[in-house]
Image (cartoon, rainbow, N blue to C red; front, side, top):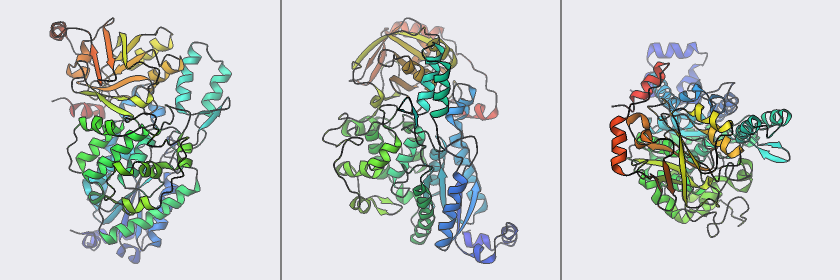
Length: 542
């Protein structure tokens, strides 16, 4: 049954009148405005205001925008460092399912405007958009501005690093308090190229937003103008019959991954992009990451890999300039919400400045910012943000393991000053099944950086990292410890080699010793406190 027929069902029509809208509004094309506003996540505080701007644009273009505050907006900064982080990744599926349920159940909508912000909100909405194949456009909520501490830029990673410094009396109580107060000075998603902003950039690269959306800041009036324009544009998409799958093609995903590699985005994009592609009907080969990375120069480094942040990126030209400089690598025939990508490229001016966005001829590196690693520690793969590794780190890093079965134990060890040069911190049973929930490891990685050891200490985990992670850090190790992967067999004192040229992590043990340990292995169980976590674990345990 189509939307017009649903709206003419007697009970449906009566209930719609009950919301306060009139006959004229009901009979116009109805557009769902989906968002997840709350007052605990700085990236989500203003989504209701953006929704009003979108609604105004829809009305101006002859439609009826109906706001639905649905979905989950977890603040990873607040959830981090305790069991709350276990709920962050599962919220991606909650977002997808809640949107699909509401849109499919009511059946009156001809298009959807998605207003997303922090880390699992945007990918969950993208999964919903891909699965339903309706006219769709995205409004991303925008970054916050960076803080200022001691005349230097600051962000949430600055706050995490200060925690370890304070624990070892490297900074005073006053300095600590100042950093906490000044690191996140405005609403918006965190100021660096962390997961929320990485996914906003990916969304623009996929062609599902208006140009400039990813980097327009939350407190910039440009964001609200773009939101109003997005409301108008969804009506154009409805009239032309341009649905999400006409935009989310295999070529569009390829383009987005090229951009992802070029900007050195969060390793979490490697979790999310394949999940979105699957909803759009495409299989995703993990090796594709390395193939694309090998052909894509890394032309952007933002915090945590440099002192530049999203505001600098925005002023330099944002995603539009990234794609202009990568034009020869991209398929410009793909469709976007404003027409062909080639048409977008025509209006982009490149003044050949390279302070923030490097020229392709003079990149930070000739290969992309993210790589998939294998080897006997990760035979099914793992992920490293190579753009976050200091250039002075040798391509072959060797170290000695210190093994932990819980993130909190590892963090205590680091903050106590026990970590030393040449350590390889192993944090396991933090994978999707083992956690369960696959926590981010920004606390321990930032603590290592805060102690000035990010060039000398490595961290391996079957958990994942924040986009704010920098250093010799490899996550997403598969098989995870809970499922009996090699990482479950590691012991204190094992020798590890991380070979960045071969993209491998290996423990220097022969196969017979690993097999001997395997026969003696007993799974480390962590209790699940809620049905959400129990159900999430079941997705990964056959």
